[in-house]
Image (cartoon, rainbow over all chains, first blue to last red; front, side, top):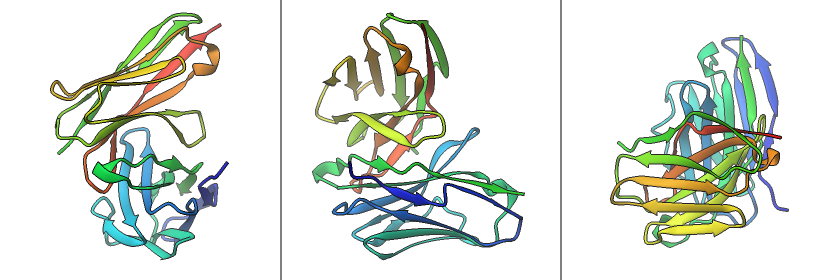
Length: 116
Length: 112
C-alpha cells in the first residue's frame, strides 16, 4: 500500500532549538497538507501545497514556522525557535485534487513533538 | 469561518449495538464531507467521502449521510464490534483546493 512517510516519529527538544519535520507524500499526489493536533484544539490546518506551490499558510505562526516543498518527494515543516506551546502531533497528508475540491487525503503516522 | 462540531465527544456501547455519530457545520457552502477514523498514536484513515451533491455513502457496516441545508452529517455504524473502538473525525471540505476543516472527534469505545 502507498503511504505517507513522516520523520521523525518522536522528537524531544529544548525551548529555542530548531525543529525540522519531514514528509514524503505519495507519488502522483498533487496536494500536501500540514496539520497540527492537540487535545485542546483538535486538528488545525497549518499549510498546504498544490503541485508544490504553497497555497495557504495562514494557519502558521509566521515568525517561527516555515513550510516548503523543495521537490515532489519531500515536504518540510520547520520551527525556529521552538516553544513549549508547539508541543503537539504534526501530521502530513497528501492527496489528489479532483474537480470541485474532492480530495481524498492519506495521512502519515505523525511526528510527536515535545518542547521542554 | 467554518466551524465543525461533533457530539458526543465520547461514547461507550456494548458490542452488537447500532450507533450514530453526529457532525454539524456552520457554513453549508461545502464541497464535500469526509469521515475519518483515528486509532491511538496513529494517523487518520479515510472512511467515507460524500460529495456536496450526494445524500449518503455506504461502505460495509458504515453509512454516512449528508444534509447540507441543515449543516449536518451522521455516521451510522451497524452491529458494532470492539475493533470499531477509535476516534471518529468529521471533516468538511470548504475550499476548491481540497483543504479540510476538522471537528474534534467522537471517541468510541465498544465493549465486548
